[in-house]
Image (tube, rainbow, N blue to C red; front, side, top):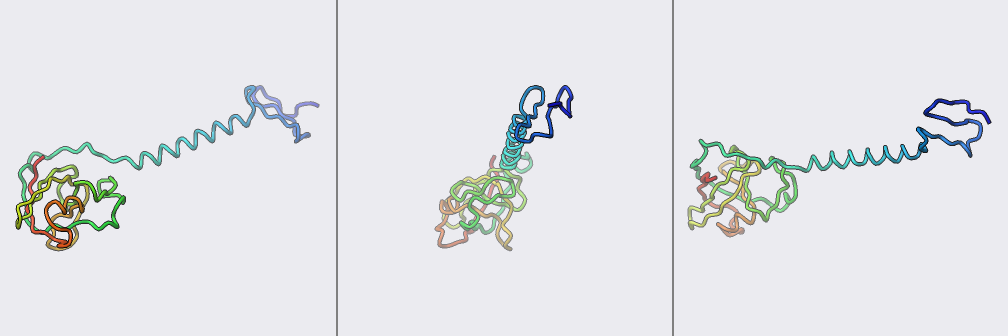
Length: 162
């Protein structure tokens, strides 16, 4: 049977669909479909994973060292567990992290309960709190180091220490 579409690259006959053979550079066309599928899946996985990365190359601004502030501290509800924080990290209520309205992400602060002198060191990785009178939101793990969780709020002093 004559080949109706012949080129050095592609060669097939349209008259016999059951025996139609499509080859590109002596490889079956199916090979290129598989290759394209593998490449597209790989790219999709890379895009998803790049969205999961967080930026942890924080540098302390020298003028913040020693900055302090006093006010009320609260703690996060468990409903935020594994949700993204403003820094892009996943929130974990069991780590020593906190939210502050303006301190840069990655800043380390010591939070001291004014009433009992208990202190905890936390890293800022989120924004908040958004309730008037509160200066910092702590994880439950951090809050429990300075106050009983049942109280919900604590009068604290925070100091930047990096």
